[in-house]
Image (tube, rainbow, N blue to C red; front, side):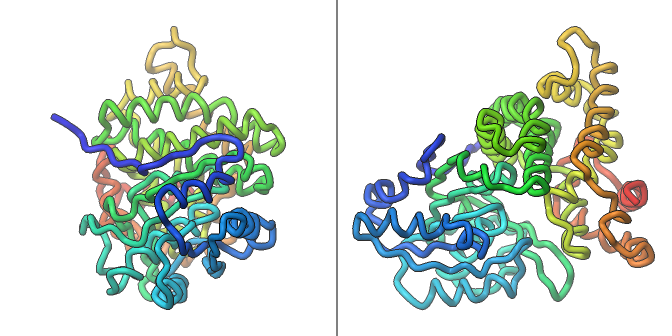
Length: 385
């Protein structure tokens, strides 16, 4: 059995990689880019630095900075209108997962039209939209190297998973220096998101030799460095390792898919506007405990790769250490429960069945080593409270 691996055609990795944007655009003969980003990237000056770099080689780039965290059908529409308003030949997606996910959707809708629901999984989007140069500023989502985007339909409170090589960026410029300004909360949430990507890619049913190698390498980088960057955002060595780990984790799950944590995480985000990485963090210990009996060796490998278990520990001990570690990470990184986040208990409990059904409909739980029934997903949601 063979596996199809899809990656950006160019990946520039390391300090100052983002400053190579002009030379790369020239090499690809792109002349009129649109920068898609958010207001924070404008305020920090990152967007203007990209503009200035391009201006120096006579490439003018307009900016669309109205993307929002956890993008919605409505939030991307202005970007779709913008991309249709001129003959832009590429998109520079600058920011965390939300601007990059927004750019992916805008690139497809701007070229082919329709509405986002038309492109929802299980449709596989093979059409190539407006080419995307992705410049991530967080070490977490891996969106710069994935064939996925997530857009919420605010009319139904559903986070729609959209899949296919049409969403894969053409270029990824992975510059860890852009993460040095990342706040502590975002550092924690995106870091746990990356860890979840690596773990789910490795234990999922669609795991393959290529994704396994990427996932293990990612966990070796993320495990020892997640706490370091949380406590010291200026730890350059740890920032660099987290950025590379996040990209490797993104490569792993893009080519093997995610599983139950992500399936259950999306409804929490859609209903209660919990940041994606944070809802993953809430779920990871409980989902791991639920899934572990069906992938004992796989989870033990994760524990060893993260540096939690010793090489001589048997699988049972390794997995006990893993469960303890996931709980400890959440405690140390101040991950709240749904109650502590401020979600209304009655509302949460009343929505459990619809959230569970949305989770299953996304397809991700079907890739879990232990495939849950609706009532089992509801039970896990209750455990979180």
